[in-house]
Amino acid sequence: MRIVSGIQPTGNLHLGNYLGAIRNWVRMQDENAAAGGDTLFFLADMHAITVYNDPATLTANTREMAAALIAAGIDPAKAVLFNQARVPAHAELCWLLNGTARIGWLNRMTQFKEKSGKNRESASVGLFAYPVLQAADVLLYKATHVPVGEDQKQHLELARDVATKFNTDYGVELFTLPEPIIPPAAARIMSLRDGSAKMSKSDPSDMARINLTDDADLIAQKVRKAKTDPEPLPEDIGGLDGRPEARNLIGIYAALTDATPAAVLAEHAGKGFGQFKAILAERLIETLAPIRARFETLKQDPAEIDRLLAVGAARAAELAAPTLAGTYAALGLCR
Image 1 (cartoon, rainbow, N blue to C red):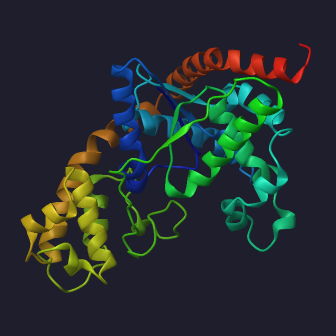
Image 2: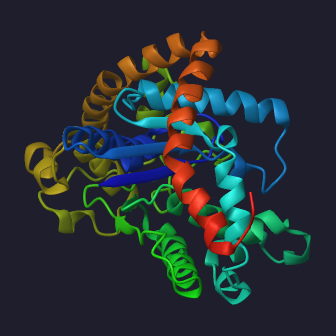
């Protein structure tokens, strides 16, 4: 089993990233390492440049994201951790696959429509074609499985289409068709200010999210000020209907404790949110404090972060080399 996944280095991770994806990455890493499989996690800095990024900020964000992932449990001894720019094979394979990918396929990508908005003509070519780079990211390593959320399933299907067409067109069995991993336990964490919107780095209010870098006092303050309603916690899930903020806080506590929302309600039914928020804040602080402490230590040593990323990149390049060579050969390109 070979698992590949990436994340854009767009600033500090927040609770939604941790409970929704990173914690599952850590579990997959541990389980796959125990089974003798390869797990690759990359910082998608080449995806980041499909829109303008201040160069110095991108460099800093890449290092900070690497530090945050390691602090959250990604272990460079168990998984291959690197940033795309250190492995040029990603860009090479993307260009080679541009001859196989079809404009009609890319035109159907809903995320491009969302990100480009009404002014499609001003969007970069990279923003339009980045699903081909996503395909290259996973096909390069013959990934068997890719963790995806619902919003990324379409892109994985495109990767499978590209792989199938290339293999068929050139009469080879070069690319593996990756299967999706949709973790059933992945938590969907919503904004602390609006229970109908996902927790996001782009929310203008910092009070809407809990960052993995927040200290204990700030976590407690954010939970205390989180939007709720005056009703006490109900006895069953049905009592959360029409109460998105209440549902969100219950969901956060359930994810932190590896419990079901029903089990949380069974334990805390009848409590007011003043009491429940104090319990939730205590659990959040207990979970996030060691992550924050390790992150702060790692952040002070950028040279060590670069060293770890370079080690990961060397291993990734080694795994990628046979696929890249096979692609050049299948296309009849002399090297």
